[in-house]
Length: 148
Image (cartoon, rainbow, N blue to C red; front, side, top):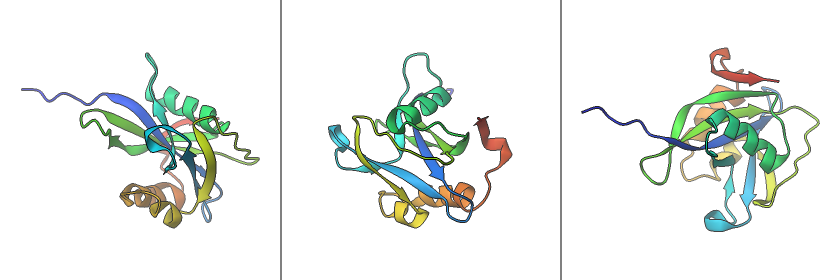
């Protein structure tokens, strides 16, 4: 019996700013819904007919007003809470000038170091992998999806 692949239902986008020595990760505070008051990276659900990369770019723009200068595959998917779907993860780089414009889904934002971000999540392992592969070194060219 062939195993069924998990359907991608949404994205998480780790938005980074700064140089290799001092990169920071953007976290947004949810203003409503089931996750009200919690801090999360940019994320959202795929619209009908939209591929995950399109969703990632749309969500970054909608939630922050930012346009990434480059977007990479994080290299691993995140299981969805429903147990059978998946969330595709991306890493987006933004360059100055950086002016955040939050949408109605969020009440505030913070730029965090990898160590600070690790304290904001239940499982810090993905943040550590993000730090190792994208925050403390230049990302691998093979992971690049888009460069503006």
